[in-house]
Image (tube, rainbow, N blue to C red; front, top):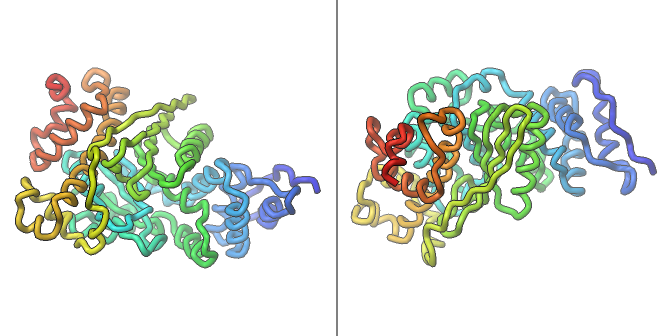
Length: 392
């Protein structure tokens, strides 16, 4: 049975989407994967009601059974980006921070990293979907504890960024089609490539974007997606950091060393490099259980306590090992972001900053946390004016 060749694509309004399902499902020998452009058109067609729910569900299942290709996932990312309101893309954001995995037990310590960066003038956009994996503890459930706004429109998000330098947006408010896709893969009872694609949309075209994964092989998939999107002009110049996150979430695990694959995309040039954050809790044991019932208010307590290990209020709620693990997660995650910021600054402001090492990033991370309430002469601002580098 011959495979269906690459199709002649027309506009979303004119295309017959049955042809894509036929290409995916034409028997064991006759089927093939979708191209980048075909996958993008399928997602756009579904968002506009031109591809039906049955067609989209069939495509998702066929790709899932065979195993999604890099081109298919990247095409879905492109299609999602094409459905975004243009005003999302006009937001001024420094760091794109997708938070879709949630955690099984622990609180999202990454929120304190994002809050610290925002307090120092670095604009952070978090986005996630707390309904995709409802059995997990998601970032969205903890936003109010640390006074981070959850916004539904580009206008309100811009206001939050203007006032606080940080905002969280639900995936379905960025692109309503994502709610429909989630409903489909929940009805099917299967994961789908949409769950990978949504992490990659970078809605505001931030120059730094974080990507986490958990299962082996997804690091290579994410790298491939980035390369395809840069090559097709879907991504603007910038850096994407890919790493295995703590329980899959976009936060570093301090109990192991974290390898970070950085895909740098610039005009007609894609470079890939590897960085590493060292293990911060060598030989650490404990704090594996007992965190499921921790209140999100602990995030506010930890943020406000200058001496957490002797705080009666905090130690009444958390063991010493829990506090140590939380602080180390903060240090490792912040160090990761600082490494990326240093490389960005060195490329755009070569006369004012320099690239720091992983050890310097960890040291700077610790100093930033200790001095998080100093907004006028913080270690981060000192580093950005090269003062910090003279001392390390």
